[in-house]
Amino acid sequence: AMRAKSSVSALAPITKEDMVQYIASGCKPREQWRMGTEHEKFGFHLDTLKSVNHEDIDMIFSRLSDRFGWEKVYEGDVVIALKMEGQSITLEP
Image (tube, rainbow, N blue to C red; front, side, top):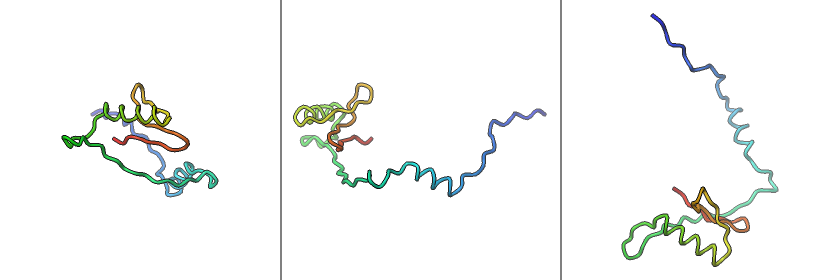
């Protein structure tokens, strides 16, 4: 009987040192360290208690940008965040 050729190739196992080096490669130098806080906010319509939708978020982002000068961050045609002076307002799925 014919056997199908395996498409899996043998690789050396990943070691603890490999993992440590990979994670450490993403670290910033100490002089670039910053500390900040994160505040989770959940938007609801007061009259229905339903969650806000993407159109609502777009309106909120536009008003914040227009009124306070936040820079819009786009993914395609959609505003997904605002940023200003090292600060950001972002969406989470």
